[in-house]
Image (cartoon, rainbow, N blue to C red; front, side, top):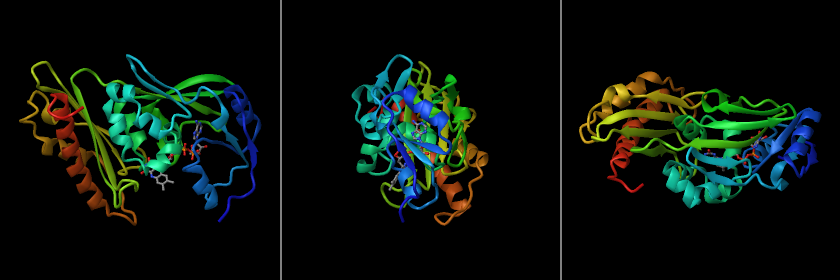
Length: 291
Ligand code: FAD
């Protein structure tokens, strides 16, 4: 199928883009087009107009600072994946991006577009939630920052208003002595995950675990964050009862069945992948795994 008719705008500045969004009813932002164009081609969406932001300068920057990694609206998945400074500041970004679709799609698709698209099976919303990041949005009314906990409202629904352009997202730098990991299972490499789990484990100076948290995708309408510190706090990485921590995860989620997996299968997968992700993050926290 082909998309329905739409008007096409190519703004050169952010101001021009937000003016267009404010003035044009039914307009959608076009970033990498890797999600929007397929849904338009299948006629699952028929926006009246596209505001193509690909010709706005300055939106592709990746800034790595003390507080974290800040990306722009035109930072492609592949640019973030291969950025050495972003990797040094937060290896979880590269590790997770390697699971997002295929390299050709990552070359065009934007990480911020993936956040706004808010697919419950998408990896980077899970990472933003796990790290407690935020998204900066612009409209003709000004700028506002939306915390990750408030950003994902439902399946394919973010907290963005129709007249708002997301201009940047910040993935905070994890605390010192923190290890991270991402584990997922997909039917084929590059497919959306049946379940995906990101983990962060922080240890104290004596190498005892002080906090452990996971974020899961494909087990709810939005990414789900579960704090499992209670199951492992004070124990060493080597002695931690990760299956107990994974039980806390299984108790906290309520996955649904679909054509790909039953609810019970998803629950069991969440349990197994959580234990693996936590053990791997803990190993990274004490330097037993390559960062
Ligand atoms: P677009 O398609 O351009 O836009 C997506 C939506 O976000 C639209 O509604 C658009 O209006 C809105 N939007 C985009 N940018 C902004 C902005 N700055 N401000 C306001 N609104 C904005 N993703 C995964 O996470 N995991 C996968 O395994 C995966 N597999 C894929 C497999 C295939 C075959 C394909 C085609 C895609 C897959 N994707 C996957 C999706 C891919 O990651 C997309 O790149 C991403 O979801 C959307 O980014 P985009 O830049 O292409 O956004």
